[in-house]
Image 1: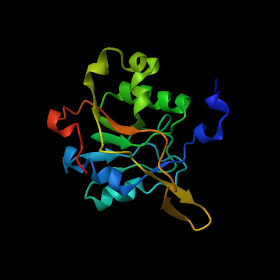
Image 2: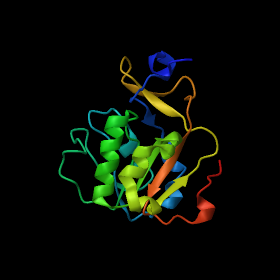
Image 3: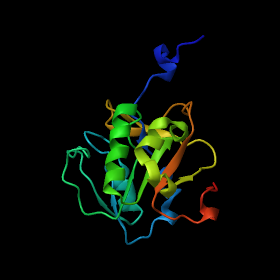
Amino acid sequence: MCDLAKCSVFEVKNEYYTQKKMWENIKHLIPQDKIIWESCMFNSPSKSMEYWRELGYEVVGDTNWDMLNCKIPNYDICITNPPFETKIKTAILKKLVELDKPFILVMNTTNLFTNYMRNIFGEKIKYLQVVIPQGKICFEEYDPENDIMVNCKRQPAFYCSYICYKLNIPQEDLWLKK
């Protein structure tokens, strides 16, 4: 039997950043007058806030804010791509459920099958919806040598979806078209 935990191909990597296209895919789900909190920017070179502003939204967030310990800003919806590491991700999920405001998270779809998702959401799991993209979501990586974001060289080995909370998305919008 293979021990995938010791395989470098399957190592946990938290440096996957959101391409602008990922946000363009779901722009139609978010009213233009909503203030977006990009909460997972702590010490990050991500361009996510910049992308949302280019799409015409007001965005709050800061690379100095640890969303688990910062003063929560005024916002209408949290939209972010949280770290993949389970301990950090579950703490973020708990915080967002505690805040009880709408959110959209880009997450590996296998998270939906975990016990921690059911434990964290409890009775509030009824407010979860999954928006499924067509094909795999691809990410950006930071190139520190050139101080730029570049598309990942290969597609991830996993599929991601947009995990949505308290958005009441119409059924016909749960399956994205290219």
